[in-house]
Length: 405
Ligand SMILES: Cc1cc2nc3c(=O)[nH]c(=O)nc-3n(C[C@H](O)[C@H](O)[C@H](O)COP(=O)(O)O)c2cc1C
Ligand SMILES: [Fe+2]
Ligand SMILES: [Fe+2]
Image (cartoon, rainbow, N blue to C red; front, side, top):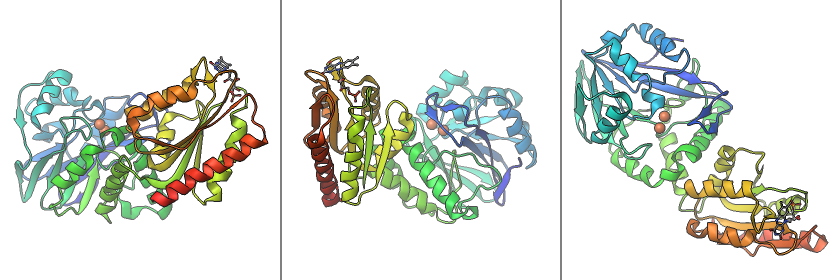
């Protein structure tokens, strides 16, 4: 692949991580992910964010650089928006090729750069509002964006083109081939990247949602003509589409989220499973969309996407050794870590003798600000009365969500 010209003197290049890997060592990505870098050339040349040192990706990166044409020693400055290794693990090798390289990074970033790459020379510490004039009208301005995604992260804005290089913020899953801009996508492809943005958000950014609105406020006076994140598509036709989407996703943490319900259920011997349909019917009777995940069969990365945007959760699980069914406990623990907060929740499940799942659920979710509808619990297999109660409780939950949306 070749680098793509975004505007005179500004290029996008990047690599794809394929679907046989787990992002951050844990998130499935059935359609992979891109790691984007950008070159801004005036009299001086800067690269914004580097790439990951896996397989033959650095060689591919260098071929793209050569297509501009540039080689490592032609690069004067490396702008390090974010130190996570998906953007920096190739940095030490690149620095060896060009020991004159100068680094622009936040103060917190400099400490992390030393720890991960052993580099403590040629460093320029930057703060919000600092600029770097590359000549020929290209001026970079830096904006600290703490915790999007690490404490050291910043955005870089190029004034003449109005391009915001936002690193992980405004990113999405999904590999990138020849098409890099939103206006080159079909409606289906556009929807795909928006969906992948939500899943990426729920997996990577969700637990840091409180920092999204702060970062957006810091850049609100900028004339943003393109949003160029380090993962996914470049938003040029409507750059506000992805910024607004991220603000909407962040808002789901404090609720209410979308008037939809995610049903997540587990069952060992089918007694809890028998009630799933009644729950779904109850929700549909009120006309709300339903997302269904079986635990542990579905990966928590996908469950998080559904749960993050749903105002309501219906959690089905039996009691297991006086407590919650362990795979569901693991998913709910992840909900806590990722701040799946402020949900309307209904739990159902079978028990054999004295139960216990509900008690543990109540304790575990105390900090999540969840509002519970009365649970549906029964001993052994469910009879028609249980099914009728289940349908009506699910409908009750759906009504609460409709009233709150
Ligand atoms: C390994 C195991 C541990 C269980 N522990 C409890 C328990 O502590 N308390 C209880 O009331 N029932 C317990 N049960 C019974 C189940 O909750 C009961 O069989 C229930 O109907 C299972 O629902 P399911 O068919 O949806 O898996 C246990 C069952 C198994 C297999
Ligand atoms: Fe990151
Ligand atoms: Fe990243």
